[in-house]
Amino acid sequence: MLGWGAVALIMTAPLVAMQFTSEVNWTLSDFVFAGVLLIGGGAVIELVAWRVRNPVIRIGFSLFVIAIVALVWIEGAVGIFH
Image (cartoon, rainbow, N blue to C red):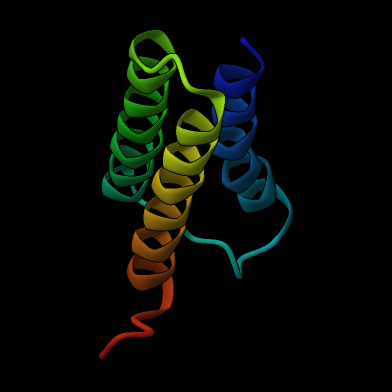
């Protein structure tokens, strides 16, 4: 439950920031991209949590998924790999 709350918080942060500054300018497609990325990553982590018994492998795979989500987010935001 905590993870899904974090997804909701991350999704509302740009929405709130857009009310106070013109520097954050997300479109609907930005919110869709972020939502698909965060919900997809969260779903994969939940699936691993249900299926994998070994806590070391579970934590390692979860950290791997979080790293991939972060790299895709960074690439979408600033194009660091271009």
